[in-house]
Length: 272
Image (cartoon, rainbow, N blue to C red; front, side):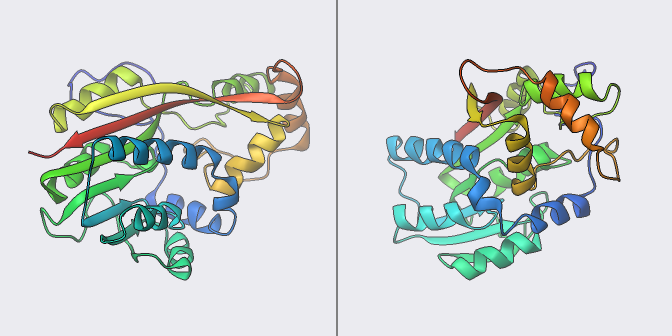
């Protein structure tokens, strides 16, 4: 990540940001495989639903920001059957898939400039979306703008330390060439969130998921559309020999298979 930003409000998600069109295209192409690959997404999103239940939230207007294929839009509809639910995602391919599943009104929209009136929602739910945004502070400000007084924001993201094993293996297999997305350091994330959302509860935890092999992990990331998005990525296919070298360098877990670490972050905030 380099040096920490001097100004407390600066959240720099990664030094090599992908163009929004590339992000939308990558995730749009993954629309048909996303739900089968979304173990982490469901785990982290369910944590947010549990927290909202504990807070006794009873929203009547809900925005699922970064809705993907609409899996959590439908889960929110089941949890809050009287609510009007809107799903928004940058990727047209994801929105088309979500519309086919029903359960909410879906539209393509940029999280940094949302086409909704201020104070129009009781809940903004955003699961593993903001880490892909060029201006995460602006996304947080938009979430704050959209919430009525007493409304809730429940948001999740990934932090520095995510996929550390994969990063180390690629550093051995293909030195000097990035293959894994970079994520914001936890201290910077906490400072930025509380700067935009005073009193926000920021929760961080390392989750470890099992995989049959490093290649199975690679396939899951591809199925999600979450492959490396920095400017240094190869525009041609990675040679099979480099993949084999990465597999050999990947740390072996106890027993069969391997583990991948995800440094997960959640934000909970009630608007005043």
